[in-house]
Length: 192
Image (tube, helix red, strand yellow):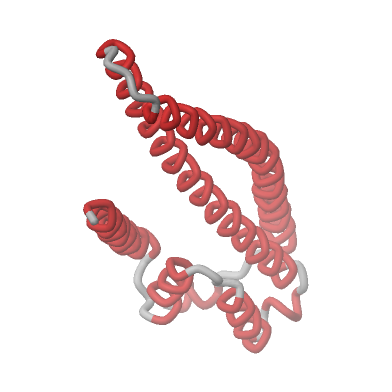
């Protein structure tokens, strides 16, 4: 037990820890920046395609209103209408995926903020030993949890003292259940 209490990082180890934290922060920030650029280009492309799909759907519906006895034309009209409806659905699914990226980007930003705060505390000998500093930092991290899953993860790890590996599994299960419930609600809405 006394060995546990005697464990103290030396100045060199603290410096190395800070360098690793700063490297991690920089990697996260660069990843967010690169991802934002790519996703913004994809969003513009999907908006463009979505507008054209709507125009094709509208034109297809107008063609269908022209009365004709030509069964080939009616068959092609039905096929075109079916294909544009499927494309519109896939576009909607892509937009939902982009919303996931937005959440991911926000989470990584929160992680970056937390790591920056940690690096700041660890870099000052007086602050690292001050329990008030740690409590203030913990409150700051908690205030930064803007999403439900982040708040729940914080509670599992900090409030309930559940090991991170177990907390991650709990959150994966919760998120999977929520996704299933959302899909089920979406399917029920489509039936009406």
